[in-house]
Image: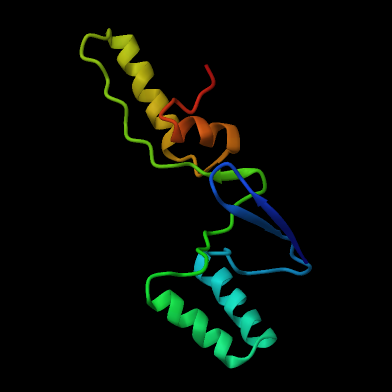
Length: 127
């Protein structure tokens, strides 16, 4: 079952929630999701619709872009450049900074509030 949201969020993206009715071995990578969408297009529309879709993609103007699936309410943690550790910090402060960097290294998904803070250039932590 698919629950579609026609809401454009603050990131300029549309979001759809897919609820499985049976087990799946898929990791829901973007190519798998896009493949299902194109397969559905082929089942519903004529062959020319699939050809038109393919031509748009090949010309560099895809009608949509699909991301990997991720847990509800979460987005992938954006790339964060490592903050510089000021040389004038004391040893304990440098250790604290390094531990904070290490703590975020393995985080894959964050809530939308954290995502917003990170893309605005702030720390993932609330102030």
